Amino acid sequence: MKDVVISIRGIQRSFHPGEEEQGPESVELVTDGRYEYGRDASWFTYQESEITGMEGTVTTFRVEDGMVTLTREGAVNSQMLFQKGRKHVFLYDTPFGAMTMGVDTQQLRTETDEHGGQLDIVYSVDVDNVLLGRNTFRIDWKEKGGSRQ
Image (cartoon, rainbow, N blue to C red; front, side, top):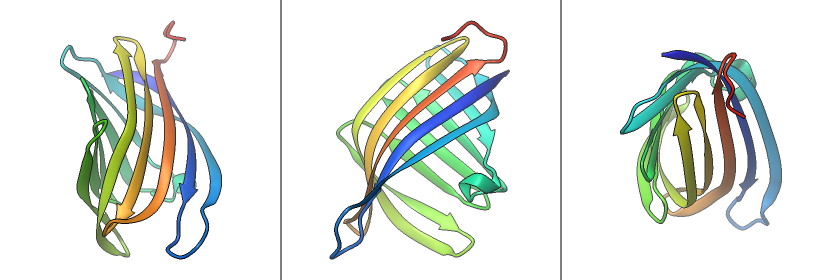
């Protein structure tokens, strides 16, 4: 595994039943992580911090052709599957309780090589088919000291 710098930029729009759309809210995070490149799948992982509200959680993204799996383990536990045009249901387990949620991916673009990669994901999140938000994320990761732009 290689040491990488991970940059996460996102825009979140929240919805509350019976109310207007909230936001958008921008999020930006730069953190250190680890990366493993494989021919069929690649993955990168990092420790969440107090800034994200998930301190004590390890986040891993597994990138495959046409699919990305986000796994969180620790203080928050979940596994989200992003696949364009598909809705997937998952369990979101926090110290405050667990709930079943859905993620519906509208756009997914992945690019990886031995030095790093980039993800672009646009998706909606719901609880019991009630829309909670629409999110857009761009995640870049590059090998420390590497030449990836």
